Structure formats: C-alpha cells, structure tokens
Image (cartoon, rainbow, N blue to C red; front, top):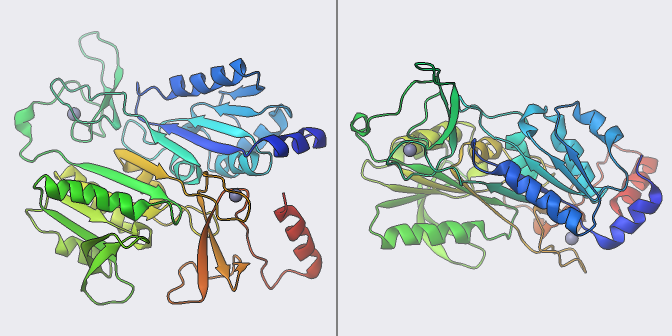
Length: 388
Ligand SMILES: [Zn+2]
Ligand SMILES: [Zn+2]
C-alpha cells in the first residue's frame, strides 16, 4: 500500500483535504477540476486522475503512492462506499482529493454518493455558471433539464432553475403565463460548530428584512411547547424565531404572506423537513436554512445530505481547529468532549443539558472516543492510530 517514506514526508508538508464541485450540466464542474489538476502540475505536485466508474474499494489498489492530488470526475457514478474511501485518503494519507459530479440527476433525484460527499467535504461548492436556459429567466440554474428529440433536433440537457425544471423530459420551453406565483429558492448554510452558520443566517435574514420582505424564522424546540424565542449565535447576535417541536408544527406556523423563511439547527428536524423546504421553495418562498452537516462522529447529520443536494445555493463554512497547536482554518468536524475526553460511538446523538462540551476540529484532530466494550489491546491500537 502506501509507502512509509512517502507518508512521513506527506505528514510534514500537508494537511490533506476533500473538495467537492457540484452543480447542473454546463456549470463548469469539470473545468474547475481540470484547473486544480493543472495548477498541481505547474507546481510539480504529482497527481492522478480517476475518471472511469470503478469499484471504490479498487481505488486504493490503483492509487499512485506518491500522488499528492487525486481527482475524481463524474463521482455520481460511484456507490456510497466512495465517501469512506475518499475520507480515508484525505485524513490518513493526507492527499488533496478533488471531486466533481452532479448532485441531482436530470429527473431531480439525488445522485449516488454526492449528497453525502457534500457533507463530508472540507470545501464544497455548488457552481452556478449555468444560467437558466429558459429565455428571459434570470434565476440561478440548479437543475438539469432533459429535452426530447423534436423535429430532428437531438436530445439535449440544459441547466435550468427550479421553477423551469420538470422531472419528465419535455420538448419545449415554458410560457411565463403558466405560473401564478413568484419563483423561490432554497439556500443552505452548513458547517461544523463555531463556523458561524447562525451568524450568516441572521445576516441574510436581516438583509431580507431591510429590503422589506416578510420574514419568519424557526428553530427546533428542545421540548414539546411552542415558544417565541430567538435564533442566537455564540456571539449573542439574535433574530426573533419561533421554536417548533416538529415539521408539522413548522408547516402550520408559516403564514401566507411570508416571503423569506429562515430555519436554524435544521439537522434536528425529522426527514420530512426536506419535502417541506422543497415545497416552500417551489411555491415562491426564499428558504434559508442553517445546520450542522456532520454529527460528532463525522457522519452526515439527519436531513443534511438531501438538503445539500436539493439546495440552489450551498455555503459551506469552516472554523479554526481548536486542537492545541493546530490552528488550521480547515476545521470542518465537531468534536464532542465528555469531561475533556473524546466522546465514543456509544454516546447518544443529541445530548440536552449534559456535561458534554464541543470543539471545532480539522479532519486530522477529530477523535473518536473508545467504547467501553472494547478490550485493552484494542484501546491501545485505537490510541496509536489516533496519533496520526
Ligand atoms: Zn428559469
Ligand atoms: Zn487540527
């Protein structure tokens, strides 16, 4: 496998990262990927391209041990195992991995491992170079429309906005008079704890309020009561919000005249939140959502992968790593500490009012605590590997 000498060298020089470029057809994903590859070549870094769909477990054996940059195009063709393989390459082998792929297929269905990759990535970008192909539309293109063969013209795939997209292939453009509601959008702000997600949400809600839009903000209630509370960041910037116990309650609270809807801590809602967010965006609302993309074990958190796939805009924020002496500004993981010790996989996903504290960590300093069931030898091995 990876030569020991290369690995030591790599650890001295590099952090390793996972970057994901996504977006509809013609959005420039592959161009971005190629630009990174060319830059690496100019800098004399050794790189490897993986283009053909393959068994992701076979990737490791194909890998050039000296490669510093790995590019994977058309990542939607792989299965879910790709996420773990690429995470290992970035974390353990400290490679810079750059992935391109579409997160939704032409029917608007989430594609392959892309939703999970958008959560696992250190840097994730939804490209919006593809302007909606509908004549006169200035909305952001976030979907791929399939146009059928008509009068000898070949089948085409064009980028369109969410309003001008249909799951079924069609022959022609829409007439604007078919719509009786303004067009809406879904924006997702994601990242680890202390990355400034809530501050960014509040900044956007304030902008909408200054512009005269009717704004409603929501957050999950930690108990079953309705409450008028506030979305508040760690720095005590606040915005009034309604705390709701579940998705049905949120739906019931949305008023007819509301144009902009903010939702904080969206990872705590049930999976139905995805359908509600899509419905509101398709019915003319600007939905702005903030949430933790990974849980304390670095697993995609609840509805976040699907929200990342369906979002028209994705803003992925990073924090500074709080591990002593690291200082990397690539922190994308949330470390749970119980009495100062990393929490283990046995711990409950959500702790309310417990003794746990949280830190932002980069992918190299995110630690998994040891579960009580494992014997002493396994503990020693786990601690050794944690020092990488
Ligand atoms: Zn459009
Ligand atoms: Zn770190």
